[in-house]
Length: 243
Image (cartoon, rainbow, N blue to C red; front, side, top):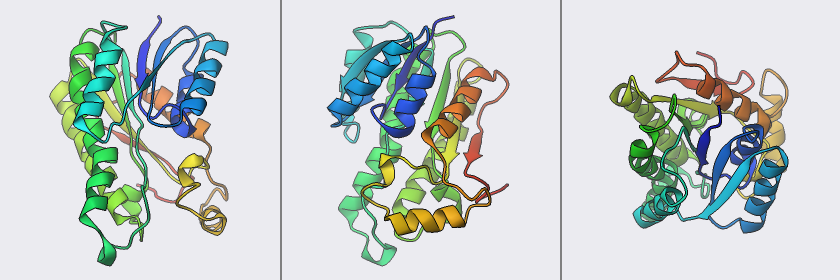
């Protein structure tokens, strides 16, 4: 059965890989902020794989941006089957002793508040969907601690907590889960991680490699399809963190 899917941060990396992997026969709303060329290329790939793509630009680090996203989405559909809260980012590296209040606001707005507000706005549409599911993209940083990325890790930890609470709140109609990627070789790291850092992380991973965006897309698909899983955060990190 065809699904109607909204993916935030869908222009590159994990969001783009997930959109393309879910394309066939589905209607996909691809949110992006500033990467318009990349968003257009992802939309082209979605349509080449048999999907229907709609591009929506919005800055989700503000309440008005989240509302704008849903005003546009609601103009094209009366329901959603899947919401993937993927928009996020480290913003910049800063050690705790140096933390600036404005940076904290930016990190939490982008990684936590946006997912919470987008989800709130999406619930009425999801309630009209078929086997509706929400998947939040968390991070290994929420579990292992990340010097110079403590604010980011804390924001993702809050997203994990939100996932568990929301799963109980929305059950049994809507399932809510999360995926916590390890180090994934995507544009996410271009501005905040050096090649040396990426190589050190690779060496420190039991599987001796960094992940690919497709690895996370596969985990997202599992959580969407599995009808008896809710409130879980699934680790996909090459073995760097084990429960």
